[in-house]
Amino acid sequence: MNFFSIQRDIPGIDPVFLFDVAGFPIAASTVMIFLIIVLFVVLAVVVRKTFTTIPTRFQTVMEFLYVGMVDMLDEVTNDKKRSEVIFPVIGAMFIYLLVANLLGLVPGLSEIMVNGNQLFQTPTGDFNTTFGLALGSIIVINLISIKEWGIIAYLEKFFKFRDVIKGFKKSIGEGSISLVDLFVGVLDIVGEIAKVISLSIRLFANMYAGQILMIILLGAFAYILPGVWYGMNIFVGALQAMVFAVLVAAYYMLAIKPAEEAGTQE
Image 1 (tube, one colour):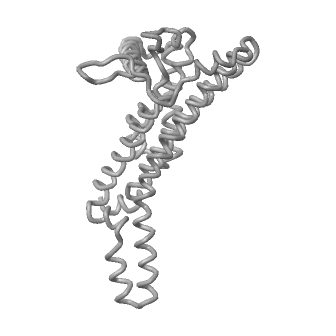
Image 2: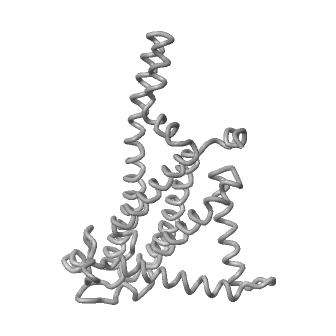
Image 3: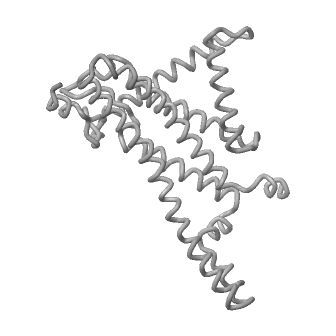
């Protein structure tokens, strides 16, 4: 086992930039993202042309995956109408993360080099990718919450000044309790920021650690453990994609009005 060779192969946390396009640096993870987009376009064309009334094996696999994602989403939302609304986004996010997590395990793909660097690197092994996904998800969820509740009611979830005024009008005790609620509401702003950090770091840390362990095991036990670890990486990659998608769906359900309240206003 050559320790220094393994140490040299371990990727850093910083993204690897390959070249510039119109002044914008392109990272190896970005190239992989474009490859995933191409694969999705090809898959969409194949699915559209091959789906028939009598399903083929490929169509059966696609339908099984679709039903599984819908069932998973229904477990989170407990509301089929809400599931139908967010399924295109959550489903696309899950499939993208699943492919992004697993595509780097394809033999030979990581061996393609440009200027001494890997041309393709796992997107979720780049913190910029996971942070962008998490930040975009939380921003959209908060915009949906504003649409559901209205801007005033949305802001009152964080700044409960009206409750403080009402509390002190009733009594000093209730006013003091309302001050605590006001403080907790302000802390919820920190909670929204924490959601971005936790979502992005959880996904990035798991996938980055998997890459490092794979390199170490390939160097130390070239013929024994890599097969087992490949299987573990496939499981972890699928699990992390599911966890990310489920958490975003759960945050969405926390941000909107309860079904009973929404129904009464309709």
